[in-house]
Image (cartoon, rainbow, N blue to C red; front, side, top):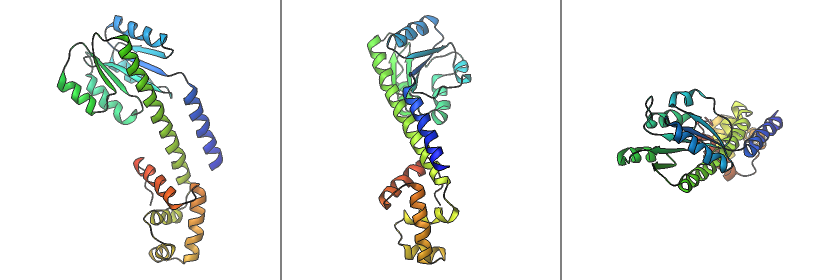
Length: 224
C-alpha cells in the first residue's frame, strides 16, 4: 500500500511538473486584461482572465505552477482581502499586485503578507514578465515541497500508535533504554518498534528522522 501511494504521489508530481504554467489575471479593465493575457501567451504560459475577484475565487484552481496578477482596487473585493483568502488555502500561488496609483502603506501591507511583486501602472512589459517568471518558479518549488511532504505524511500514517510513540521519543534524543522506561516496555521491544518505524519512514539515521519530523511539524502533523 505504501509503495503504491508513493508511486501515485510521484505520478501527480510529474504531471504537475510538465503542465504548462497558468497565470490568472483579475482586473475590471478589459483592455488591461487582454493586454496582459497577450503578453502571457506570447511568453509561452497559459492565461485565464476574470473581471472580478468573486468570479476568480469561484474558479477551481488547476494543480500546476501558477500565479495571480491582481488589481488591488477591484470594485467588489479589495485586493488585500483576496490575498488574505488565498494565503491559507493557496499559498503556492504567488500574487503580483498591480495598481493605478502608488500607495505606500498598501504596498507595505501586501508585501508583508507575502506578495511577490507590487507594480504601478503603467509598467514595462519586461518588468511584468520578470515578475511572472519569478512567481512561477516560486510556485513550482512550493508545489514540489507540498507533494514531498505529503509523501512523508502518508508514511507517517502507516505507523502504529506504539511506533509513533517511539518515534516521538527517538527524535527527542532518548536512548532505547530510556524509551523503554518511559513506555513501560522492554528494550528489546523498543528495538523492534524502532526498526519497523525507521523502515516505514524510509530513513537510516536519527538526524534524517529528525529532519522529517520537523517537516511534518510544519505541515501540522502530530508526531506523538
